[in-house]
Image (cartoon, rainbow, N blue to C red; front, top):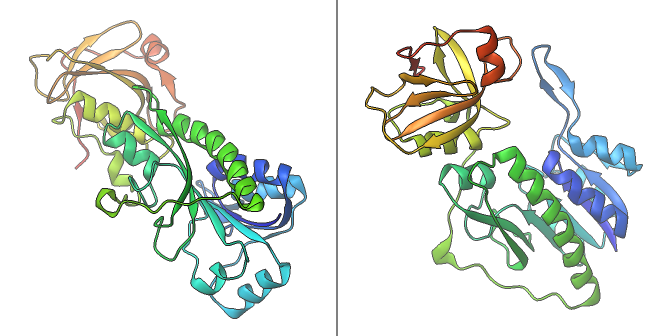
Length: 311
């Protein structure tokens, strides 16, 4: 089939590659280049880089819902549209263009975790299972009928970046199968149960701020969910430090939350509101991420020192 593909971040790249390997690509649409880093230089989205590598025509519209973009897309005559984390809602005139409609990849088991942060939210909430869904695009966010789903367990120490990579690979294969079903006329869709809907929100920098009075498991989930951004953070020695890897030690420490209760060769144990958190990878301002073993070889940490909440 002739496909118009809408996607922007890294998680959409495996889906684009898989679709392009099996179908004619009318065009790829992604969000505009955005300033990033200290220099605020415009950086192309991963989907743009991939489309250029594959030689697929692409477009980065600032506005979707004006006549110019609609006319451009209509002239391409796509048979079907595919969306993978594009980052904008499509209005009905756009949805009406492909005669076979649109298929959307979403990294959760819908109707649970609709919205912009299904992977991070699943980890933050302590879910042990998630998955991918391929569903129809409708005006309401992630509310379309579901064509295919595949479940997977979430590892107890798996972070959001690692989980996203796995779900992207799963979603790529599932999207190819979904397109096959649509092309052959075998597609059968199932409506979502409205009583089981949950909706996520955008993750913000504030979501990375550690509160040591919470349980070790809750903080561990936060550390995992905040990779690669915003990275869980707090104060150590008056400076903002970032925790990249952690583990949960269930036993309580008998010390106030945030207090270092043990310094070992490759980890530092910190008291929390319930249990202890083992810090395994750590970053100080202007420095690279280090394992605690690396950091401790060049820096002393002492029992009784404290990690503080940023207020």
